[in-house]
Image (cartoon, rainbow, N blue to C red):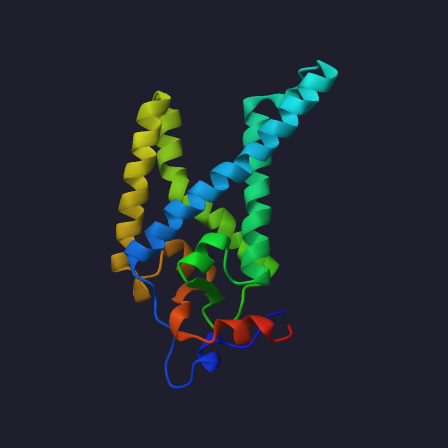
Length: 187
């Protein structure tokens, strides 16, 4: 279930890794898009409560976070497996391929999504929970960890993020690749 290698779409050279600055700019843009997407579970819950007047466990803040996490997972897995890029990645011309240069399968994309969540947000969330930090301090801790984790890519092989190395994926600069032909080949 994978497509032709990205290196085959660009004769003579392997695809390059986008700079950390470009990847983080893409990260910020992605967060902006996800903010809008994350409003969907809240709106659905608010409409349900307005129509029925019932406040069930499924409208709790924890349930809404779980709905949003699942919705984000569907968004990322679908875009990574079908297009190799999310909307933000298309704007910044960054693509996701396996270490072999293929588009990821659904299983690999789902594994990467979970690994991303753990790598980007796990440590700061665990510390904030253990120390019972207030929301503003928790947010500052998460922002600091995101910067640290992004800089850790400088020490990683190929300057890839560590979760990509663990999942057998890599981010590539699509400006030098015939990305359209890579995506259009049958699986």
